[in-house]
Length: 390
Image 1: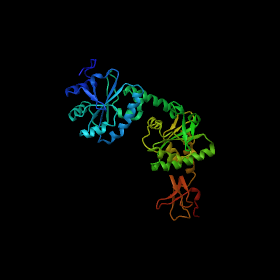
Image 2: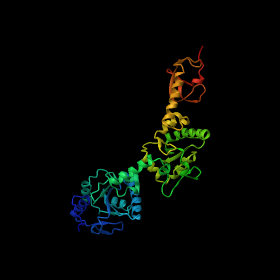
Image 3: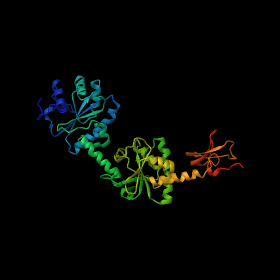
Image 4: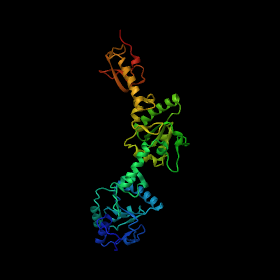
């Protein structure tokens, strides 16, 4: 096997080639079972990654199609990338079944050789993708996470590239431009429930709620009802100053269509990667979630769900000062009410209490905040429904 023309024997690529040479391997295999000599690579121009995976591993089977898509896209773009499959399958049948789904090269199946490579590159879990860098750049350790977060933009998979991408995320989050958050090259619109397209530029100057949710999620369906109520109230009282854009976590297009059909607002197209980008940019870890963006394009709050649940449309424009005004008004309202009452409709003393939501046992309407409640039984009364005993 001929050596690549460089003097840096401590680098990962050299270790990889040395281990192969120790086992008498001087070629890789393609999908057509052709032998590709190791000496045929331009090591100084090509980014080479080792893909440790196995056919028995569910996360591997889930990630491999994403990596195939990334690989094909980068190669189409003219990027010098090669991936080498290192199988951790238990037998050759599993190896063959897994490799036939891959468009790149593989080390010939050899359990002992694969074990040596796994130990040398400290692979403790799969799937794992290890870049073999030549130029001394610090490579990103969690390459799987980097690719799942950024897709093809992650290339060439260095820590420097991750820092650049994080800076771009920070700029989008704080930059004050709603079009940079919601649009991307080739798409300058969001969609309505009827399939119509609305230009993102129409949202400039409005307060926008980015609603992260999914139809399969029961808490999302419950919160959607609250958000619809607040949205419709603001639409009738303030016009179109407030808009919501669904950032879907639905599992497929059909589920997305069902979800958006019950909503009066807009959505990012289901097939668009911007959905994943926004989850990353705003660090969304659970749904439902609502990120509120002000008319200046800058974030007001990432806790919009709590604001809507507590205060509904009254909290508009959802700024800290508007929340403080509501809370001050509630405090004054509470100060004006008695601490406890004896109502003619109930046998026990009712004490003043604050609840996020309750149903009045007299008028059977939902209430929020102040209520007169019974410590002895499950009984709540609107302050306006009180009839004190004389």
